[in-house]
Image (cartoon, rainbow over all chains, first blue to last red; front, side):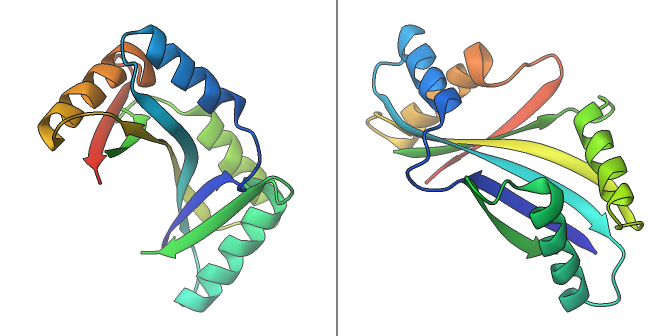
Length: 79
Length: 79
């Protein structure tokens, strides 16, 4: 099954890279850019007998490796 | 206008981080993981009079900063 995980910073957590992107864009001639947010998308094939098993496995992958639960939150879609 | 840019590696370009994720997941007890793909999502507010202007600006931002046209391709959604 194809699993898609979207990982982003939790609200309130500063994203220095997003701040740098915003500043750079303004310096490159895009003055009215604001509110830059970033997300990571990780897609992968997961061998699982059904959607529930794929979701359970994907959650465990997020908790163990893909997301940092302290500063990141994630959503999981099963294709 | 809210612009959402999805940036991924072009087909055929090796993604060492995706390879590392796959290997790590297998080492963490997820043997049947395969075909890991990564994408970056950048969302931002763009001051533009209409959708066409926002799309043009977003394309220019991608070409100048957000994406590396040599190894990356991108899609743009205007909310």
